[in-house]
Image (cartoon, rainbow, N blue to C red; front, top):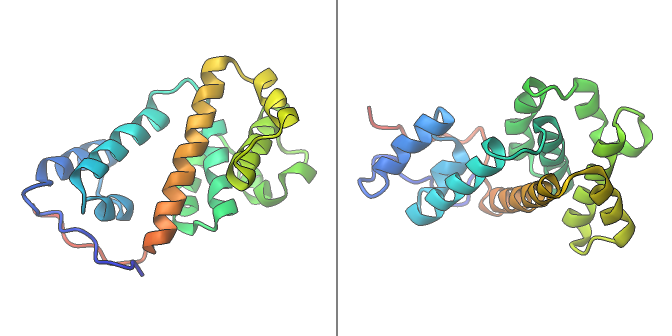
Length: 179
């Protein structure tokens, strides 16, 4: 259960932003319902995560693998629940999703995925990435995709930390969106 009530989507101060969230995301998910307590933060968050998810050259299956791995590493069930269907639509297999907790010992991930997952773990757990881990991912990806991978890992660590600190749960009831 969320630690504070979700924001009222009928608030006139954020009504245009609510309409934009619905246009871009299909509905006001729990995460955005909480973020709407601060219109500027919600708007910046929406723009940044839209860039990460829809405007980058980083292959979508790789993006989704690291997002779900971050969710596992940070114990962020909501984040994993939201991204598993996306990952499957983007071509990640159910076997890969099931194997993520022990990805090194499965043989289900190619060399690029392994480099990205090791990088994701180092960034999430240690913050300071060891040179051999960075060298592997640098050799696996062109500079643009490496920057986008790094930004994705940073962004989704932010997401999971926000979700867990605020106690956001997909089973929480949400305020009704006005007409």
